Length: 126
Image (cartoon, rainbow, N blue to C red):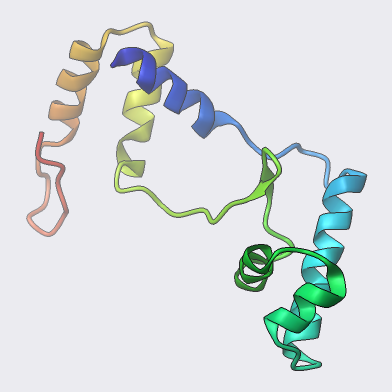
């Protein structure tokens, strides 16, 4: 279980490259997304017409219409960044991992961190 947490932390720490320049492949993908959105919204073409015109799958067209061309790509996939309910506890968990604590000690730290300070705050019941 502790290994899964480390793997999760590595994925969380992985960020978009600091340079704002996109690779050629990412720029082509971005242009294709913008073109699909333009054809659908401005020219009012159906998804089937866009599929036949551009030669890409119907499923990909649906994804491109839902997504934003300027969202960061991780591993070549456009992701929607959704806040996790565990985000408030991330500093406690990551500092525990960095300090080499085992999962039992981190769990105890989370319990201490979880003590309700105000009655209006949400708490994680461990």
